[in-house]
Length: 345
Image 1 (tube, rainbow, N blue to C red):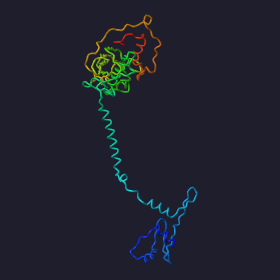
Image 2 (image 1 turned 120 degrees about the vertical axis):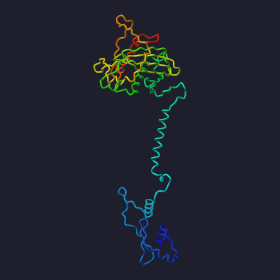
Image 3 (image 1 turned 90 degrees about the horizontal axis):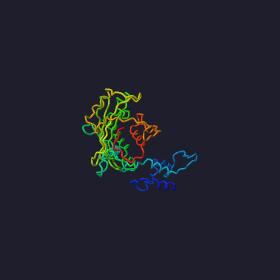
Image 4 (image 1 turned 90 degrees about the vertical axis):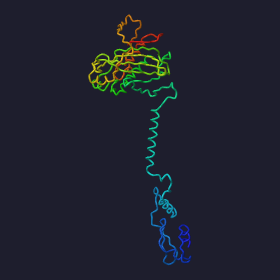
C-alpha cells in the first residue's frame, strides 16, 4: 500500500465516471510506461507492482552515477517538450534577406553623401578630395590644391618647389582623367610599348604672387602641339576665391627612350593618342628665345659641389625629377634676401 500511495502521488491516474470502489479495482488493469517505469497488474491482488526498465547505470570518468526514476522522468520530459513559441523564433527565413538589403541601402546612402559633399563655409576647399575634373569641351583639366603647413617656407608663403609639384601633379592627372595614362610616369599605353617617356626640355614660370598657408589655388592645364616632335603644356594658377592670377607657366616636352636615353620622334601611334586632346592656343608666357650662357665654375660667384642624386630624388622613370633640379639650384644659391618671380630652367 505504501508503494501504491507513492506511485499515485507522482503519477496521478485520470479519474473515470465509475464509483470509487470499482476505480480501486481497475487501478491495476492495463500497462503504463511513464519515464522508464513499467507498471503491471497483480494477478493475486489489486496491488500495483512497479518494475524499472533494465538499463545499465551511466558512467562518468569510469564512475557509476545513479539516477532516480524521478530524475529520469524529468530529463525525458524536458527533451521531448518543444521550445516555447516566441516572436523571435517565429520570424520567416526572409528576415536575413531584409537585413542584407538594409545594409546595402545604408552603404549606398553613405557613398552618396560623400559624393554630394558641399562645404559649410564658402572659403573651404571646393574639391575636398583633390580629384580634379575636365572642363572646356574636355580639353582643359582643373584641380584645386590647399596650401599645407609643410609646403610653406620661413616667409609663410608656398615655396617654388610646391608650385612646381602642383604643375607636375595636374599634368599627370590630366592624362589619367583622359584615359591616356599607361604604366609609366605620364606615358600613354603606346609609349609604354615602345619604352618612351616624356622629358621637359624647356619651362618658363612667372610668379605674380605666392599663395600663403591656408589658401586654395586653382590650377588649369592644357596641352598643345610644339613643332613636329614636341608637345607644349601650359598652366594657369589662380586664387580659387578671388580669381586672381598667381602663376603662369609654359613648358615644352619631348620623348626619350628610357633604355637608350636618347631623344625619339613621336610615333604615329602615339600621335593618334594625344592629338585629339591638343588645344589650339598661344602660350600663356611669351616664348623667350634667349639662350642661357654656359657657366664656368672657375668664374662663378657661387659654386656648390658634391650634389649626388639620392634614391629619393628619382621618380618612377628612374631619373631625377625636374622639380629636384630646381631644389638643387635654389640650395646652391646663398640665403635669399630676394623673392624669385620668374625663372627659365
